[in-house]
Amino acid sequence: MQLDASGLQVLTREECLDLLSSTPIGRIVFTDRALPAVQPVNFYLDGQSIVIRTSIGSKLAAATRRAVVAFEADEFDPELRTGWSVTAVGQAREVTDPDEIAWLAALPLTTWAPGSRDHYIVIEAEHISGRRITTHSTGATTPQRAQG
Amino acid sequence: MQLDASGLQVLTREECLDLLSSTPIGRIVFTDRALPAVQPVNFYLDGQSIVIRTSIGSKLAAATRRAVVAFEADEFDPELRTGWSVTAVGQAREVTDPDEIAWLAALPLTTWAPGSRDHYIVIEAEHISGRRITTHSTGATTPQRAQG
Image 1: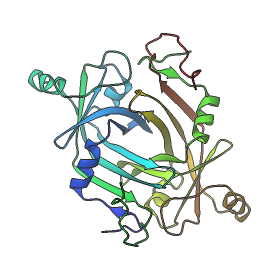
Image 2: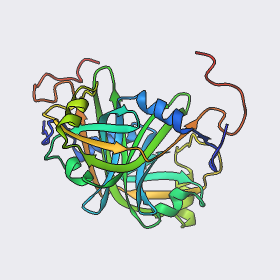
Image 3: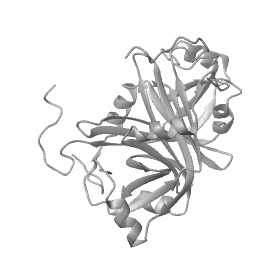
């Protein structure tokens, strides 16, 4: 188990992708009028691509057009004080090809927010990294996940 | 109930601060070597100040020094497809005044990650905004929070 400078467990790329597939909500991090911005979104991981639906006139669509963005998902347990976090960084692109739109429209990607969302943004996860806090992140080796 | 262009309920500043007080984890959004970056952190809301502990040599400490950052917290229920999100934007500052450090050290701010974290970063929430997705965010008016 590899630990980083803060004593957190470093996740492999494969673990990161598995965890990203396990959750329906992530946060897209971008720049909006020169200020840092962040917005929770429903997403679907299609291979190594993060797929997001929005409306074409949205702030998100405008701000992410041809931009490098970060995308983060996590899950924490306040009682156990454990959890994981995965961050992907990559180029966001709007999807305009009709064949690709048809492909994306068939994915099991549902959005919880109301309104029409027929505009797709895809983030290619070029860099991906993740960390896990276990109750023994300081280095003790008692297995934590064998009790469920 | 005010709705935004996406049909989400717009939260008041007071509601945003109440929700921020209710959760121990948020995400700090900053720029790291010209790229968007995001990191989950434990925090404590002291009035309108978001207080974070880190180590002085951390990437977070270096990247947020005198920077404008965003800070986001949220909570979602995947079964009900409801939830809220609050984002604050403001200047981050490292705390160097010994009296202020003593004040902050007495706050009930615990960090889950291991390691020494005796360096404080404070973000003054200059702009704060929040949204809520209810099961009736499209505009129906059945109260959703009166059943608990």
